[in-house]
Image (cartoon, rainbow, N blue to C red; front, top):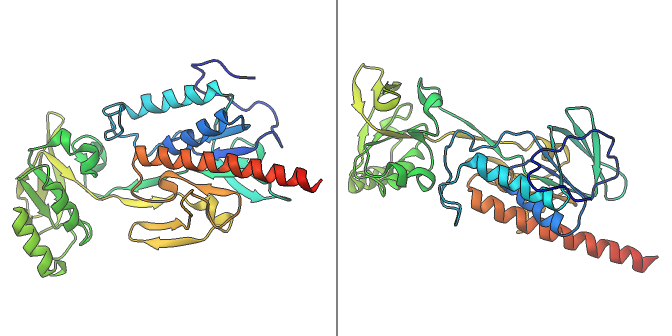
Length: 326
């Protein structure tokens, strides 16, 4: 039976063993997009949503055609309403284990005590951002401490930028953000000057990026806005926006339990997937930031759509082949 529009959360109140064709683990853009396609394909689908989207600190999301500037919270709420129209169930819970069962089935254990079963699994658990441990960074992250110029660059354009270096790769970030402001300072922080290559220095000079050595002690904040970056030597450099590079921590625990093959990247270990998101474990797909670091909301939604359509077709052909054998 279809649920009425506007229903945001459906709580599991009964044993649902064997009732689902697909369980989607993760209720962000990727997971909801996959669920929408599957629901519209008349597949019995459950979304397990722990309610921890990566973009929670951001007030707005950008770069999604027709949704540019929308609140991430509003975007997800609308997505939950949409999947409910097509009979997709959603439970606020956390998947703590996934095991392969007999045949093509999987068992998903939830933190609340339920175990649900499905023929196919979509893992959309995303990643977590670990921020540099500089006082003020975590408190202002998503406001005037930001990480992605494509997400936030327009909103802070032409302001005085700082870039907090945590690895030599931060040079690339400083060069990229110079597209949005010609007043950019790279604070080397924990990176030694000797770690910068000659090419780094030439490009920074060509872009007009100032380089300041020395460890950053804290951020200077006045009237609830960033005003500067204070170094350990006591000097303060006026800045209005600070770009940081969080350490990405992929949430791949469930995939690892299933034996999915991972590959190392500069941003962590992610599952090996085909163009549809299928992992090396038959019947298990990974989408969104669960399969890669650079998936923005629009990319994640696209990946979820592709996986959902692929799974529907694969289930259909599998059932037809079984009927032929009978």
